[in-house]
Amino acid sequence: MAGNSFGNLFKLSTFGESHGPAIGGIIEGCPAGISLNMEAIQAEMDRRKPGQSAIVTQRKEPDTVEFYSGIFEGKTTGTPIGFVIHNTNQKSRDYSHIKDSYRPSHADYVYDQKYGFRDYRGGGRSSARETASRVVGGAIAKQLLEGISINAFVSQVGTLKLEKDFNELDLTKTESNPVRCPDPDTAARMEDYIKSVRKEGDTIGGVISCVIRNTPVGLGEPVFDKLHAQLGKAMLSINAVKGFEYGSGFKGVSMKGSEHNDLFNSDGSTKTNHSGGVQGGISNGMDIYFNVAFKPVATIIQAYETIDKEGNAVQAQGKGRHDPCVVPRAVPIVEAMAALVLADFVLLNRISKL
Image (cartoon, rainbow, N blue to C red; front, side, top):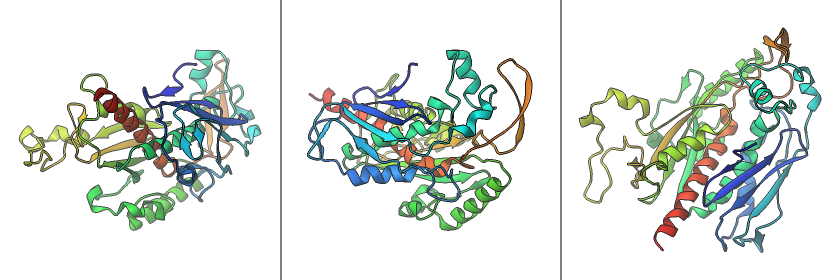
């Protein structure tokens, strides 16, 4: 299987399956001498881990990170950073009913067709459990990005949408509720809605918005490696993501150029920010902001029709422990992937200036 690594200079490679003994990764290219806050890394893992509230999967995993290389006396050594996260609460029997059939809108069918064999326990490598390793990489990347802040939050669940610009929000309130929406009233309605959907044995999708502040001018390459293109790739690589837009996004198509153009101030900043902090594929120093759309979780605890390996129509029903809505736990994943992209470009800029 190819495609298990992300990044060029700051590179994360991940391994492991949802129901294997462990998942983990190797980070290459992290500069030496960076003092790591281990508590901050574990805090990021705690934001993503299952079982943290009543509106997420009830699989109980401590998701404690164990580092095996690349760190000495609390600082990075410049060598590959190897780490492991042990799986401790697998219930593989919950997936025995799909051993010979395919769940709709999952990777089951295409894995079988591509590889001729699949790990049906929780989806194996296709499980979102793999993203725990991304959060470790992103947590370390954040500590490399001095002064740059990355804040993601839930802005929509189903049709419930946060009707406020990010500049109107107090993003310090994002972690004050299980939905991770910084507006308390909207968060309460979203939480109630997710609970009602769960009682129906169904799932719902949502949108995560992200704001990156204090980015220096000059990150990104102007042709194939545009900053927004790499951010888009990063977000679309996350399980269940169906869409990515930055800046004015799709709303920009209804604007005229005279409305959409970001006019300059004398210091090079702009009066508006329809560009979303990126122009010509390069950061311009303004806030970078984007939205990531997540589909409803494919596993529903309802009866459904599908096919088996022989192509026969069969009846099945979802079992096991699953998120009724993935976006609350995906917030730190979005931040992690954004941090990995920025870390890569920060290091590239350092090299280009030598």
